[in-house]
Length: 409
Ligand SMILES: *Cc1c(COP(=O)(O)O)cnc(C)c1O
Image 1 (tube, rainbow, N blue to C red):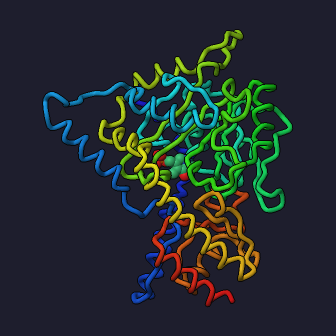
Image 2 (tube, rainbow, N blue to C red):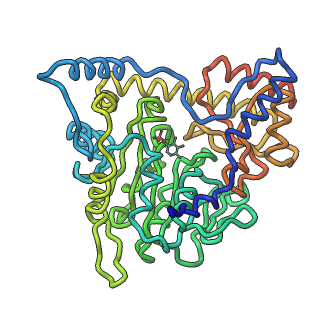
């Protein structure tokens, strides 16, 4: 008899975006002429930039000729991309990585979900709350999260991030083996200062804790004092794995490319106290379970570092950040409490009348015909907030703000 992995059965059948779609469809049926604008799902809308498109066309041409054909590539990614990453994303910030510490992937979601395979099932985990659901759910599937009680997992330490603590998570008062951090943050759009990040690195060094650091939105940072990488903090190489992605940086959500940095100095212990370098383990894991990112996607990623590519990528980011500013200014002018949106493409909005996330979601849908994401869908501390994304096109963004203005003023 084949026995199922019953840990999967613990996952609540709570599909946030499916629930949203259901409610939006119900609205559309009863309001067939309403023009609904979505500021809900965290996906980009602007097309790939010309430098990327050109590189992809050229990559297809390479594959069309026997002299330049590429079959399976290295599981870790092509040297041309790993070297470009080291040189462009890290060296200018004074971070010296070796290309062998960079693992190219098909987007950050897979690796942020898979990385937990490197550590024993009985490690404890800590997460900021609200949170990108992948971190917890991937731990639930392996049995590390315990059981869910009142919306919280019994073996997970939650570090609330709310307006009350200015979205600065508190260092847990007990030791935790693994900490997930995501900055700039999805869903709150808030960032972490160097000083605060240093506290986490020091905690990890002192407690022999691993930090999984998701920097998928680093390209949106506008304030020069905010760290783009955890390796800007001294000692972080000993304790942190960093995830990055071209998805939000360069509109690659449909192209699929990202990377994970596993420094050579990073180790974890066996039960008998032997230190094992995780770079070796991750390499072994990738060679077994992953067969590389497509040559075309990696050529596309490389093109984001050319002079033209860089400029074009920045233009798109500026476009989204202008949306964010329009949204931020409209909402604050209405006296609404808004967080994020300054160094990230997300705005985290406190429901003005103190109502619950889902109730305000429905009010906004029925009164302004605008779709948001209920904050409680990202964790218990998200209750009473909604998330808006700046990834829409300008017209929709402006129209949505006009409607919200008319409704709330
Ligand atoms: C979008 C996103 C990613 C990147 O996902 P991809 O798989 O690279 O498309 C990673 N982390 C967070 C928090 C995200 O919101």
